[in-house]
Image (cartoon, rainbow, N blue to C red; front, side):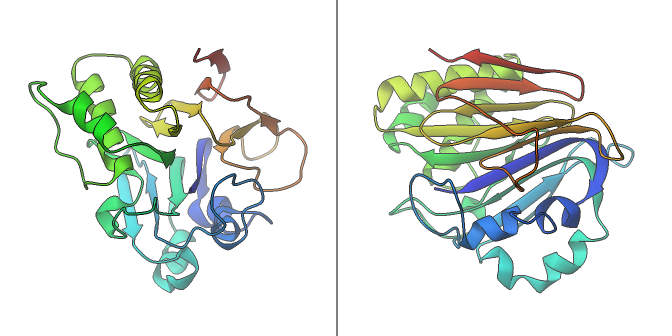
Length: 247
């Protein structure tokens, strides 16, 4: 049910993050190694990145086609560099539309969010109902609705990590079969959850690339990757990674 990854640290090209590693997100689109539900991620892909010296809001590129079919993105990725990137490849939940607006990352104009998993549509719809200033979801798919609930919490003044944790726990309590691995960034922090799917992270403190990488599964077989237990919250910046329990 999707693979996603985020990088925060020394600026890197999208190619170096998403294409070059031996088990990159590109390869995970057709050959995921740890995905617990589904076999292939061919229902779209997207990438978002920040260029703070130009504007506060992230840029996004999303398509409703397999990532390996988009030669234009492959060409652009080599000349786009950023210190904060979030990207995903999609395996659509059965019954959900396969279209660009249903593809991560979602944004409220400042944050980027990806959802790896599934949730009953009625759950985020009920969480959104009756709240003043409810944001309009990108799509009627489960992930876009879940993102809108997070945007709602953030607009109310909740801190990013608390908003993500609150939404995941609340949705999980309403749908016992939900899988709620969220990956969210605001350009200076990464927040992620494990709830029914896999997640790993690696901190790089030496060499040219200093930062933290958070991913559904490791992009290579090198040292340093740490696997998270289920139902955990990860909060990371370029200096610290803090793990706590969601239950």
